[in-house]
Image: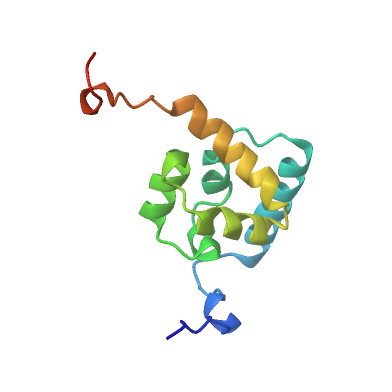
Length: 119
């Protein structure tokens, strides 16, 4: 039997949170949008640091999860990248390029020689 596609768009909506200053959130998102557009965002840490109180609510993840993932871009999920692009109204390719560049810079190549036959 085929799986049903999730067509419920309402489940991916942020709810009001009293700790989030709406003007500060709007300014942080506007700032990130322009910085992504001009290529000024060099690290995904800058997304988490733009408004540390409100950004987890906008991203739909907890604060510690946000810090862990955005400070270690290898841990970012496709959902995190898509949501970041959505909330900043930025092309997903731009957000992905920033995340990939930082992940490549921090990546340590995995040695699998022990799993291969010796000659």
